Length: 408
Image 1 (tube, one colour):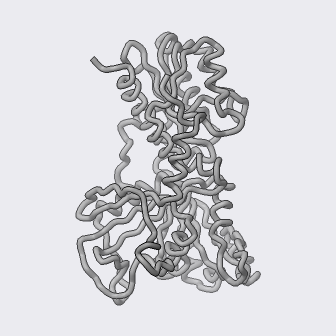
Image 2: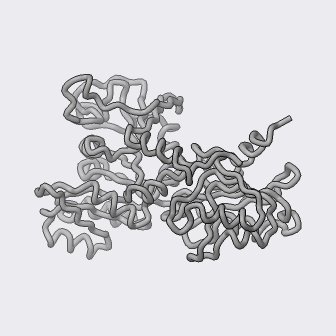
Image 3: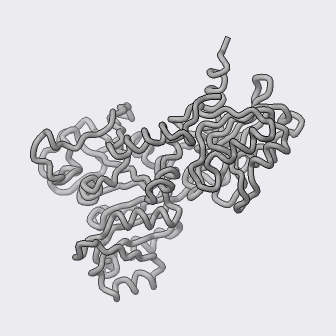
């Protein structure tokens, strides 16, 4: 017979899947899913589908039959809110609905919640358990926790290279190093993130659209069961080009490419030396321009300031798509939290590697990563790993007595 802990873990897994329906839409709010279970059967499911919309608990309660919810157990991926914001407090709705038990994955670090939701529910006589699938919930909401704790976006660096680490052939050809299956996975990632970040050189060379064009929705079956979820897929991320001198403005072909692909915002991040007339030209064309001057001066863009700006915009989950210069600068500054590297089973040779100089002179000074996860995607190998600062931060979150409470 399944243990109570195993029973809770099984239903929390469903709630975590429901939370993923909001990827790309909810920030700066967290991604939250909820399910109601009574007598071992699912009686309701909800998700926080977009910023400003009702929270997962309220979404579930509005659509589930009231007589089935009363006396049920609520599984929710984050501590229920207990404050009046854009929506009423979820603790009030939970109490009114008559839930007998609430099981949460993790606590909410926001100062206006931070244990208060659990305390209110317990004070109302509702049994509360926390810490179920906490590690998974922390990873799912890493961008939210990053913004709360370090005031910058969570950064994923995505690269695709040959087995010998090359991005392109000697003549610059790079389409396509990765397989169709790998490219489809990238499109799905794009649909789930807040913003895409690309270097100016890569943008000029490849002229990417930076749009999400997935052929398959991995959550399509679940999406059909959650009211309103089918209306918002796929999500289109914001598009950010790191162009220190705002040179897009003086290249008609590049500016024309941007204007030919409207929709999600285009942002150009430039440095102190970007000419004012170039900035004005971009803004007149409808692009947003962020000046992020580097503290050491010169034309460079301050990447820390850029990622703080993206977080302040509510773009907390940022995926970097190249090129080597931007990837190297982010890694050297310890601004990459997760690396996703596709390795194609080909050899190219030559100097066009995906990573530049990191200042590593001896093996003792090598940049270490976390434990890698490997997957076969089409003909390619996908290596996913966290970088050491992110590993440490997640460990701190796991040990936080408010966020990752022990079960019961």
